[in-house]
Image 1: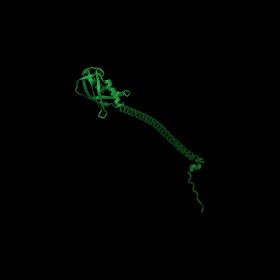
Image 2 (image 1 turned 90 degrees about the vertical axis):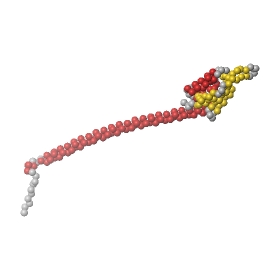
Image 3 (image 1 turned 45 degrees about the vertical axis):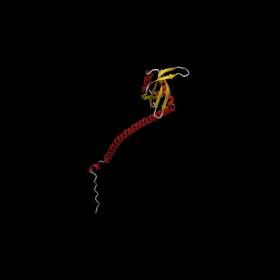
Image 4 (image 1 turned 30 degrees about the vertical axis):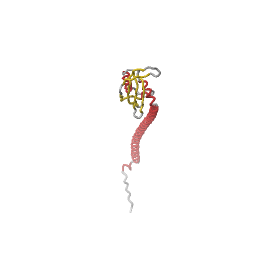
Length: 209
């Protein structure tokens, strides 16, 4: 029995010896289209990556700028802390100076505030109660009035660190009885008719500047 061979290739392709060229061309076109699509997608992805890199660079620059501002702020804080430390040290020195020379400061204040026609007989300073008691004499009663005005004027004085006398002011002034007295002048057989007085008041230390 003889073998039978059947050729399933289309008849037109059997007639056309270059039918495979068309197939190859089709395949090449498909490959070109795929490459073009791939290139387009690659370019799009590359643009996205470049955009992301730009944003990353911008964010890094912003972070660097913020870091510089934070460093500057920390430097300012350190300067403020150093300045506050110096102010505290100056205040401690001022307070210690006042406490050390409190008696001298009060005596100088009493000397500068005393009006003409008045002199002190006794001056007592109680540093615990911050109370000053003065007894003395005066030619006329208006000298005591001038002295009270001078004491009250210290309440409105301005604190000046260089002048420790400005660190105190006087309040709660109390006047005792004013009496007639006879004041003998030492070494001279002569006496003056004067007025005796007694006055008390508190002294207050102002806060350091």
